[in-house]
Length: 141
Ligand code: ATP
Ligand code: MG
Image 1 (cartoon, rainbow, N blue to C red):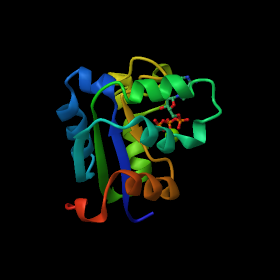
Image 2 (cartoon, protein in one colour):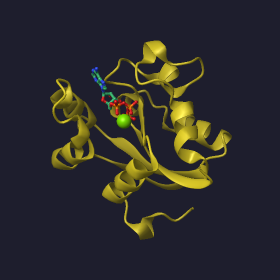
Image 3 (cartoon, rainbow, N blue to C red):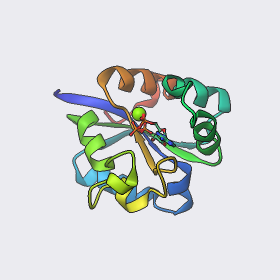
Image 4 (cartoon, rainbow, N blue to C red):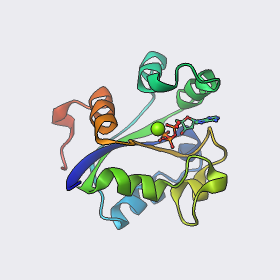
């Protein structure tokens, strides 16, 4: 484990709720640093590449439609055990199963519109960070 970097997205439904600051504050309160951040819109082709592992799933089209429907906050989070810690702060994929106080319990609307993304392994973190950030954009490690 040790000191890690992970990739995080505040999804369009949470941006619509005007809770970017509240979500970023939760990361900071849990000792994760915002190592890089940009408010952006994801291109459809980039989004398909990002979610390539879900290409054959029935919800793939809907997932890409949603993730490209509005602005997102793309972030690199850094800290001790950042990958697992971020997943814990996020809560379960399905908000109905998300623990009290987690970001998905607080801000998800459904399984699809579930407020945040977080890398699920060191390999994913590395792939996802490099898909959205140049090394010189990670300025607060
Ligand atoms: P994420 O990758 O966004 O952090 P996750 O790792 O908890 O979420 P995955 O299994 O990787 O969950 O699914 C990726 C995303 O696809 C989910 O966050 C959710 O938005 C969407 N998704 C997953 N399963 C379903 C489903 N059964 N119906 C609709 N959308 C789904
Ligand atoms: Mg995932």
